[in-house]
Image 1 (tube, rainbow, N blue to C red):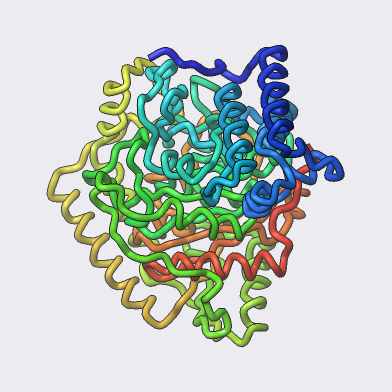
Image 2: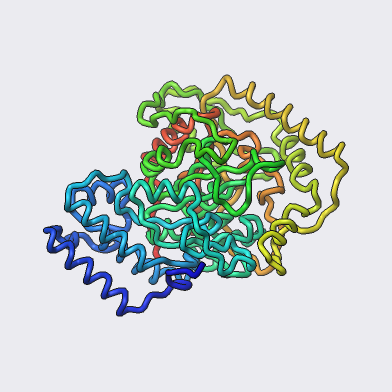
Length: 507
């Protein structure tokens, strides 16, 4: 299938202006004023998706104007960030025009009607190149949207383009987000700094106001890590909540229970907006369960029983990370919550069992993916080697993981919320050489992948600014019991209210 879109990021100025003028003329005929003249471009782009959705419904701004401003911002910051790797400008502007016409005609609107967003390049997008960061799919154009993309578009969202991800979401190593197709992505808060991975492109462009939200996938911290270092909010939902259909790494089999899909936003209120849209079975991803999603605003924060820890016993945190955790705990102390220094039992043992489990095939799972997609060259951070282990050891690792997960779940019965770091340190500069990241998927680690292994919902919001790496964000992680994604969002919102959350980068 030949893409009907821009490749990779350009649209001629004449075509862009022609489409914009035509849209403006159509809207003028319908009586919709084209813009929000009193508000500076940066102010509109800094708003939440919830706010701009309301403004669109109230005809205080047009979808065409929002799309144009998002692309202008992408064009401004992307030469530095390399976060957005493919755009679909003509289609986005055409959809924006239709969105404005529907608003002017008084038609029934979806909750995201006219709101521009980007999507991680590991998700299939109908008619839009979807590489997954691997050379074999450099020109691959799917005929169907991934479930989460289809749901966002059905709700009225307008896809701007794709954001960078390492090969198969797993090949970035300590560089965070890098692949052989599009290269290295960078953090908007510091030149040459790591955006983390694997949703590093998503985290960078959302933080830099190029899109109102993005969707990440999370196998070992790939939503929470980039949300942390890029200073935004993100949630890894409960395992079984959001379908993963249409993601480049297929589901089912040994690794199925580690992977979730969730939103990445500047503001916590947008997590609450997006989760109902994304959640629920799609009659394809067999792991999905029809469990109702709670309402975050109904959570009684004062009644929460909170466990907290600053160190997982594996990777020692820096002093400022420890201080940040304690400060966030104090926010719940002030509410009257019962807070206890405690952590799930056997975090290190679970990480060791996961490491053995994940490396059991000696990299054969990655070699199969390369072969499936026709990639003859792999990103240097992709794990292809290692020794296979006997089936008896693999079975023992599975049994050990299940036993510890049951023990941890029993421990969690006495609490409603866990507060802990997402990372032991602030963001670092992108290293010149490829090394295995300490918290990388398959490497274990108790801060992020711990909660992929259990399947519990976990989210991140910016809580402070580093002094060790001046100006770089520091995020806090909160975790709730299975299916209590609403508690995660409510707790993140409380922290955001105390700290101010996202802060616009100087870029």
